[in-house]
Image 1: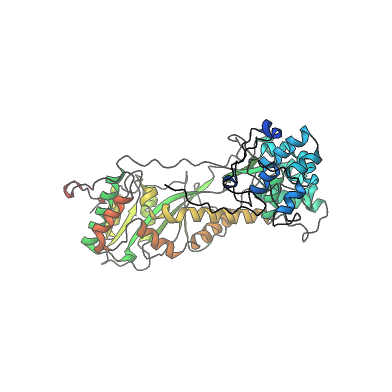
Image 2: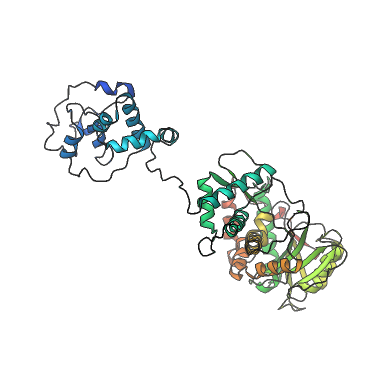
Amino acid sequence: MENEESDVKPPDWAGPMNATPQFAQPQHLDGFGLRLPRDLTELPEWSEGYPFYMAMGFPGYDLSADEIAGKFPFSRGMRRSYDAGFKLMVVEYAESTNNCQAAKQFGVLEKNVRDWRKVKPQLQNAHAMRRAFRGPKNGRFALVDQRVAEYVRYMQAKGDPITREAMQLKALEIAQEMNIPEKGFKASLGWCRRMMRRYDLSLRHKVPVPQQLPEDLTEKLVTYQRSVLALRRAHDYQVAQMGNADETPICLEVPSRVTVDNQGEKPVLVKTPGREKLKITAMLGVLADGRKLPPYIILRGTYIPPGKFPSGMEIRCHRYGWMTEDLMQDWLEVVWRRRTGAAPKQRGMLILNGFRGHATDSVKSSMESMNTDMVIIPGGLTSQLQVLDVVVYKPLNDSVRAQYSNWLLAGNLALSPTGNAKKPPLGLFLEWVMVAWNSISSESIVQGFKKCHISSDLEDEDDVLWEIESELPGGGEAPKDGDTETAREGN
């Protein structure tokens, strides 16, 4: 087979392509362990390696930097970038000879050689292909940065978690002490990020433990969906009569899930304020048409403290702040029965998790009197089948945390006589919960019911079942119709 002609066009000053060079490897490169190309066809693209190889002494040519600059079409004044490996090679050659010879040998400016020798440790620690070294520089308010960094080190030594919001608050406090005008220094999030880069700080996230899915995941999912579809076909529920409800804890102090620490550190141990158990329980409910039911708040204690609370929510109390059988019946009476569009002759479906307070005889009896069917989600699958887990809880908690952070940055944080931070007022915290609850969009709730295959089209029953099986790890066959267990309870 005849060899194809090469697409590489040699410059007019180069010899014929078929001429095999007979020149030996330059002796000054033996210490670097490099192999230079033997002809022009082995050269990389000109923009990357061609000038470098010529500067290193391409076999057959002994060119100086000026000669190289004259042979190539670009001017010597053109800006060029070099990777860390090339810079380190120049530095090592300069150390064995001098800066001037290294500049001539590699075709670079002598000033570059001097600059690269100054940052040799940084070049040795960098990736060989890294080109730019636009490392952190001193900020406009270097003294503020320094004092904030000292504050971070102090909090680290105590074992207390540090958030970026806390750093911003400290920076504003220091700026006020230094009489820096507010318009000149705002301690913005951008400043905080740059300051962290300058002092090699990073955010460390608390790693959550994921829910362990059951081994018979495929069978449980398909069985559950077939049960829901069977109930829907039997009773023809309206979309507005299908709902999902669940209780979730919301911490009063809203502790941050991140802390600032040195880059590259191992797992970090931090102290907490010790009030993680000071929380409320919120019973939340959503309907398949996108509507949200009024939040049902359970406070910890034997009485509801006096104060002004936001309208649109039901507030109860329990000794331990838990949802109980009695409170579940109360929720059915004051929230579920009074929902907009509820009618005695219209049958409804309410999806709950496997909490034992949901499936008691008294709760079943109450739901039967309200013409409502109860559907229990199989154990271990709430993260996959509960609408509130899929589309509500994360944006709800994120919104509460954002409002809490804004409250801190506004300078409303008060300290107790012992120096500990006081928790926000209960009425204000409930306002944050209400604002976060109202911010959940109806469209996301509607999509959540469809994603959990609760309000999907009944005509596509078989297609949806097979779609679920195709999405499951390992696939698997659907259970036989005779093996399907209904998930309906109490009717």
